[in-house]
Image (cartoon, rainbow, N blue to C red; front, side, top):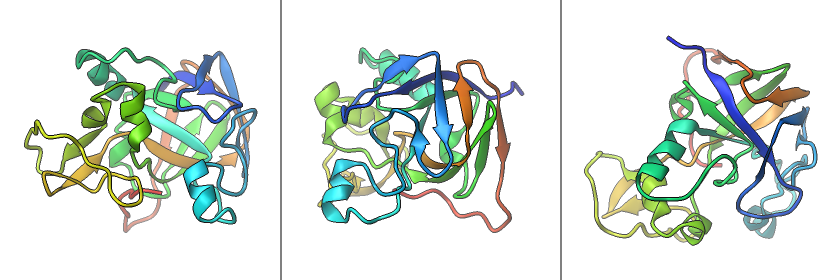
Length: 200
């Protein structure tokens, strides 16, 4: 099996949906990506700040599997690295199948997975119909219906059936370091029993 690696890294100082690809990003322990709008010890995502600005920031780093970008392009969406707001685009790694508490060693930095990104309306505002790519029925049955957003802005179901969120995972920085394109990724699973990722 091929070694997982970093396809691209991105950051943005402003609260915009997409982030700007760059050569390297610096991860800072307990804060996130230096120079990124979502870095901080307390929540930085605006919807969560409105609900409770004193929550710990469990969304310091956003990672997406490269296969999702390929799938979105195949469906006609003009997206690339950073388009979906991720800090790190990965290859060769089933991010969504990893449990809570998994540590990823990237370059000389380490992040710990906290949960799934909960898709929101900004995804469809970025590219109409993209929400259907990042959200699927849990039973795998294709659907032509529009994806409805739940009361908190996150997707709850498609056609009344539970969903699989595929918009990436969120993490916190446990060890500072620099992450660059082509850096290898080493996976360190937590002790059993494993807890599946859920939205944070």
